[in-house]
Length: 63
Image 1 (spheres, one colour):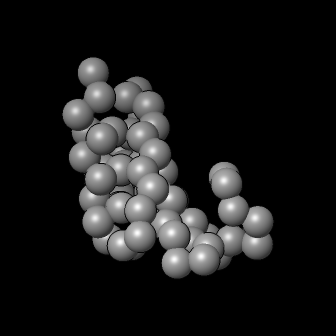
Image 2 (cartoon, one colour):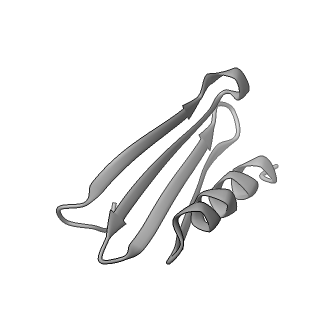
Image 3 (tube, one colour):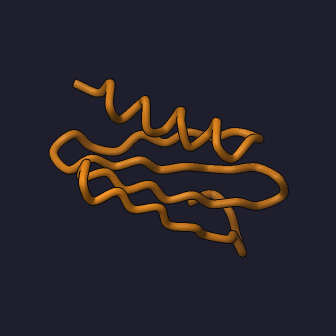
């Protein structure tokens, strides 16, 4: 986590074993996407949903 006093939102997709955590502070977003057995990918950006998408794509493409 890089933000102090951040707002946290959890998105949980159990059917795909995917969890996404999103932090927001000062109009900047940080998303952590995790798939069990594959690891975690972190994405940072200015737009919430594109940052979430980038994190999810990153963890899906991990080998």
